[in-house]
Image (cartoon, rainbow, N blue to C red):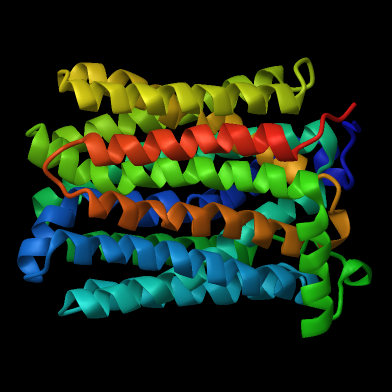
Amino acid sequence: MSTTAVTAPAKTRRTPGTLRYALILGGLSAFAPLSIDMYLPALPRMADDLRSSAPTLQLTLTAFIIGLALGQLIAGPLSDSLGRRRPLLAGLVLYAVASVLCAVSPTAELLVVGRSVQALGAAAGMVIARACVRDLFAGTAMTKFFSMLMLVSGLAPILAPVIGGQVLRLTSWRGVFVVLAVFGAVLLVAAALAMPETLPAERRRPARIGSTLRGYGVLLRDRSFVGYALSAGLMFAGLFAYISASSFVLQDVYGLSPQEYSLVFGANGLGIVIAGQVNGRIVGRVRERTLLTVGLSASAVGGVGVLAAALAGLPLGVLLAPLLVMVSSIGLVMPNASSLALAEHPHNAGAASALLGVMQFVVGGLATPLVSIGGEASAVPMGVVMAAFAVVALVVFGTLTRRRT
């Protein structure tokens, strides 16, 4: 596997220019954890304020995830045709405006609509960030850069609930969405001023529905691509089971305050960062596929451990240990799964990035209603969904992907 970069920035990964790319692309990659995690501590208060039920408020998470999937399907091919900058800037404008609309929503139903629109803008940033990395890097260099992004984007799940908890001390849940609007506006300015176009005109593809669908068909017929993308998506489903249910489980069942919950959530985010940086250090000496196997195996072990602790009614500390293992493993899974999935598709990186993201968030979106079915009085429903998806992810990976030399 090649370790050389395809453009000049890849050859100078530690230059200030590449650091600029890492900060901007990392910020774009952080849209999902920031947009999801910051308002999680507020869900119980939102249910009271909007006079809505917990399952209805959890639909704001489902709507966001579905919007992320659909938005990536649109933004990915558009960026292959128009270049990366124009769709990116349009998406950032949409995100900032929709965040303001969420902040002023008078009902849960309108909040669900606002979250859907917000997700479309976030999707453009996320899918184009991955495509830009594929434009700039190849082989192990790409995996290392994805790992570097985990340092930036991985801070989001650490800081987001902490920021959300502190915002709740100063104002209502609406202030969380004001902060997200400001974040989107800052990224818009940064991308407009400091992020150059990474896809030259000669490498762009015509934006035709037929060619777009054929491109998706090529990707879906690639057994390895589907295996890497689907295994990552199934792991995401287990992660989203934790994201959607943990606020109610840890606060209502185990009695944590919003601030204590934020600290627990942040500790799991720190695990993602550490795992991602370890991955970046050793990739090249250890193959991406091997590291991905370790990450998916750890996720399965952690998910089964969470379920066992919940079924046995063990203390919170015992539950949190396997939970940390499962959540942290994403730092190993995502850089390697993304790199391996995109490696063979440099000429339609936007579409490949879109399909990679769609599999993650569509499959991930299935977890939220499944957890809701089990109710909120126990950690068992969360544990069942987490364990099931994590184990299936490992099985799918072993079944669909083929070993590469």
